[in-house]
Image 1: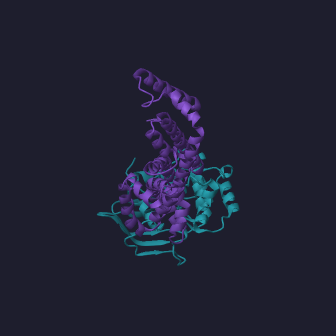
Image 2: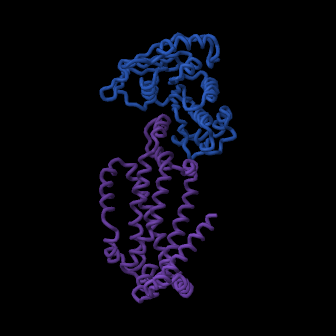
Image 3: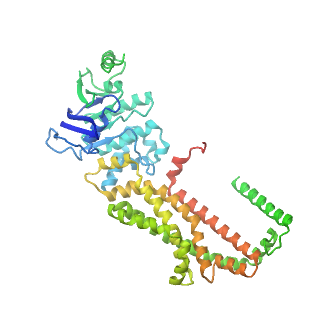
Length: 236
Length: 255
C-alpha cells in the first residue's frame, strides 16, 4: 500500500506536505512520534475520516481501492453502552443490515477471553476488557487492513503488554498500521517502524529488528534498539 | 427508608400548617386547618375522584401527543439539514408565545371539552421534548460516528441514526420527558381554568367561587398527588427504557 504526496494543514499550520508512506502487506508497521506531530491525522486520512487536501496518490498493490477494506480501532474502546458486548462486536453487520454471524462473534470473544461477558453491557468491563472487546469488534469486520490509533495507551502497563501480545496473535498476517507514542510498543510489535518527526512532518524508517513480533521487551536486541531510539528522540 | 423520610416530611409539614392556623387564628374560609381539609377530602372522595379522572386523562393524552409530536420534530430536525434551518427559528419563536395567552383561543377553537385541555398539555410539553431530544441527537459522541463511518461502505444516515444517534440521545429524551411530566399538569389545569365543565382545575375554581376553601384545598391536594404520581411513574418507566444511563451516572454525587 502506498501513499504519495499527502498534505494536511489546519489554517496556517502545515502538519505534513508531500508525505510518502509505504506499508508492507501482511505485517505490523508502527508509526512512532511525539504528540501533535500528525500521526493520528495521517491514520485518519487513510481511514477516510479526515478530508485530505491533496492526496496525490493512494494505491494498493492489488490495484483495488482502500476504502471499504479497512477496520479502525481508536484509543477509546467506542463500545456503545446500550448494547451488550456481543451486540457491540456485531455492530458492523448491524449497521450494514447484514446477517449477524453470532457464532463467529462468539468465537472471537472466546479468542480475546471475554466469553463470560458476552451478554453484559460494557459498563461491567474494566478498561483492559473493554479494549479487548473493541479488538474483537475490529476482528469481526475481517478486513485486510487494520488501522489502530494508540489502541493500548489508556490501560495500565501490564494489561498493555497482554493486549499487545493478543493483538499480535489475532492480527497475524493482516496489514496493520499502528500509531503509538510508546517506543517499547513500537519495538515490540512493529515488523517495520516509522518515525514521524518535525514540522512539516517527515517519515524515517528505523532499521528492522530481528525476530518476529511480539518480541520480548527484555530481549537484548530490543533493549539496544530502545537505547538508540531514545538517543534519536533526544532523550537519554 | 425513603417511605419513612417521606412520611416524616409530610408530618412536619402538616404540624407546621396546623401551628400556623392556631397562632394566626385565620378564619377557615381563608386558610382551613389540615383536619377540615382531610374531612372534605373524605366527604367529597367520589366527586374528587371523578374530576381527577378527567384531569388525569387530559394529562396522559397530552403527554402522548406531545411526546409523539416532539420526537417526530426532533428526528426531522436531526435527519434533514434543510429542515433545521427552516424549522428551528419557528420552533424557538413558538415557545416565546406563552401558552397561557393562547388558552382562550384554544377553548374557542376546540370547545369546552377535553380537546382544548389536551391541546394545552400537548403544547406545553412539546418544546421540552423536542429541544432535549434534538440536543441529544446533535451531540452524538464523534468517535462513535467515525467508527460507523469506517464500517459502512457508503454514507447511510438512517442506519447511523437508528443504531447510534437515536439510542445515544435517549438519555437526553428522558430528561425532556421528566420535565414534560412535571409541566403537563399545568397545561391541563390552565386549560380547565379558562373554560370547562369538569376536571380538578374546574372544581378548584368552582369551590373558590363558593368560598368552599376546604374543598379547594382538597382538590389541590389531589392534583399534587396526581402530578407526583405521574412524575415518579414516568421516572421509573424511563429507568427501564434507558437502563444503561444508570451505568454511566451511578457515581456518588459529591462535589
